[in-house]
Image (cartoon, rainbow, N blue to C red):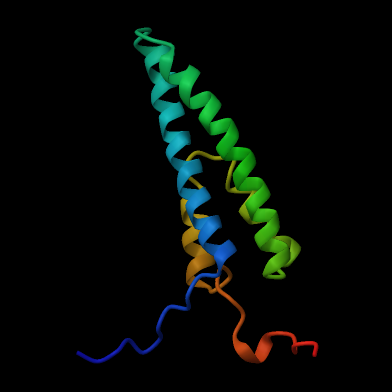
Length: 120
């Protein structure tokens, strides 16, 4: 079986952290939505909002911090950074943002020719 024509570039350490935090943020958003359904629609329990509200708050902050670190490390422009940060607001939008950034190589280490020369 032949190798793929365009192998996916490996994610950088911070790119992997961004991907993980994006998934966690989306998961906690989904949990919070289920919790709100149970609290306000079925009026059965407040436990989901209590738990996922706290988890999502932490994931939201972590996502923002990691997105800013990756933006600086990978030299994203202001537009890409703004899109990544704004993706934390609508439910589950961090997933398409992560997929887009991964597909376009913005979570990968810079190619060798683009890296700054080493100081000796």
